Image (cartoon, rainbow, N blue to C red; front, side, top):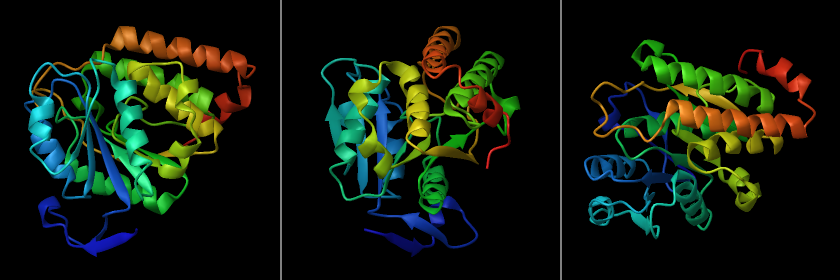
Length: 263
């Protein structure tokens, strides 16, 4: 286990960087991503040999394409949702001798070359969860998604007790020690709400979040419509967070801390 120091020419970086090797696993949940999964998974292999593609009951050739690469492919029996796909990937990653797990979507919205940025921040930060934040480029967001994201950020930051940037980004680094502490059966949410609830659970376990900037890729960069539905999913997130706050007496100190700058 450890890091390997190398020059990553594919990333067009001007200096040497610490590149996660066997210490990192990458989990890619995928549903009907035949157009993009090969490029995403093959790119992740530049970062680590531990690449896990979880096919969430795709109706296209996502799984078959992934199986042609040197990656681990987990096929769920039917479309179980993103929460089930992530949990399956996490459970497999926890059988490996790794220090952390990076998650990214299989639709091409995330650049695999940013794995090194997110993972490096995670390794350096220790017991922190790292979010690849797209909010430094708000002009690139569809307005409805930007509004929904900011609403979710407010509520999740309150419940977590610290400022959370881009709570709806699926590009994240999770310390393996955090994943081993989480009782996934206790999480009540599915779909995109699961990732929001996981941020709150992490905070309650003593793992705060930091963010690193990544590009906001929309307007033709994605090959299929997003599975994220702003009105439906943000409503479900707010309901989940409201119950979490009620159970903790509305956590007024958490609200105060959430308004402070990220540290």
